[in-house]
Image 1 (tube, rainbow, N blue to C red):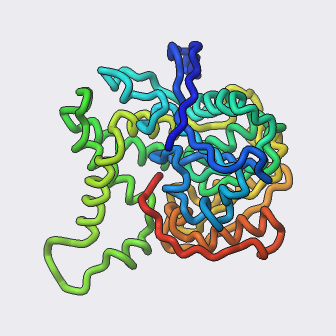
Image 2: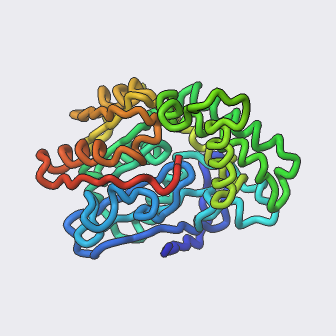
Length: 344
């Protein structure tokens, strides 16, 4: 169950606009005297309930075990899972735009409220990784270990174009702008997104046809189903905001230094993980991070599933993370869970 932190003072966004107050939904599993404090930054449509959406990493007998680890995950600004966002307004389209820097600023307030001067492990994938790298630059002394998965130092033109295509689909719905509008547009946007979250090979493996049919294709049904399922759990206005927040990601902004100089500020021992079939966040972006973060290690997941591999190939991800965290494989316990949902 979500906990809530209410910040009763004004909160200024990077844009200069001000929220009169702020609510952050978060989960906080495990003992207060835990051996480690783990902070998980979730991906675009994720929630604070990390045990639900990352069951191969977080849970009993998993790599991050709430029986011995304290595991915290906070929902981002603009989302629809309890943190301040468009769903709070009668006119949700009026909620101001937010950025990755705003997410991090809000989560700093929560970490301070929880009196967490030091966090042992900061981990995030995709948009979660964007948050993690921004936070590790902003407060380098706060983190001992940093794990960045399928993410980047600044969002790419390709990724921005994919997000804009989704927003065009979203806004083609004439009900977008109404309190409960935009649902058909959200279906279309999510169908587009699935093309970037999976790979050509993944579709070949899972959606190929045996018969020489001329209609009713599995691949078409699959993306349509993903769109329909997504509407049941997410909000069109949050989706519009959070894709823009992802586009805003650039650790250089506001720092007046080169990318190398910015990333060299990170003090945490760092693992950067890439996925060989990821076209949305190609491995060149993770290699760039690893090249400029002092002492960073680079790990590669070989998978046919594309960007979503961090939610699918738990055995391979666990192996890399366990080796990094423990320097051997004794703590590694294979997990063969399938993801409950796509959470990018």
